[in-house]
Image: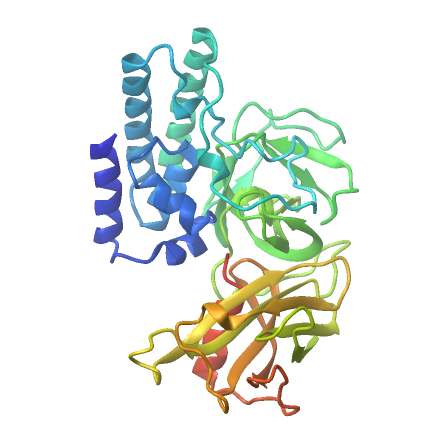
Length: 395
């Protein structure tokens, strides 16, 4: 296990040693989950491993085989104990519907929690054989990473309530981006809402080629527990919720229209007031047009030895049933405390989901007394981009 973890850490170094937060933006898992995967404390789940390797630009087919070999080794050395591989390859906490509810759960590395009791040996063997079959599909996807899916003649029908297909869809080469299914599979719908009938269900472990995305019902991401309003479009026009697959559209890809979609955020206004629950904090409140998710960030130095070296820091991201979008921020944890005349720029950004900022934002100066300036703070283009990205990061 230690050698396996060492090779994972080495892969990250060879990829330029990106931070785990940076990897999380690509992998779709939290930074703590990815860090735990390379710690060597326990065997990571297969989903987490492949997300980690993919974010580092590694060979996912090769690492899938390594995981299977490690899994078999751990089983043989501890036959009476359940190894982490007894946890399903997808997110065990994801509901059977294929889309999570808005009821948030505590964030954390749910994919790497302690294993459940051991399964019968026959079922274990079936799981290993299924994983090997999926590995072959993953190898094909590695050759054609930007693929688009089309169901073959034996795919599920379009009738509501059909069962999960037993095989992954066939692929083409004209997709805009890809994503991987996990958990109990992914339901495909005709409109970006969960009250629409299920057209068919794609099984876990499939690499999907996606043509774009539109905006619809807000759901919580199964992994990060952050809200998301993006619904990804399959080649046949079916829609899947962003929060139930691993993968993100490329930077700069704008949402397209689809039947039953909702308009994107148009305006946002940030108000800052003293925190009524106690001294030394601010109450941030954002309102606007067509807002569903709002991220907040502040601009300050994080090193007392370099007070002029300022950068943007995420305060939080929230998605509520209705505006205003409120957040209480107490900067007591800052290593550089604001002076009596210091002002801290604070931004509110309309997000589509984790890692998906829009250009709809508002910036105000927060004063030490808890109030703010009435004037909107203009930002240069580079600072505007940094503020947007930071406010909408996966926490």
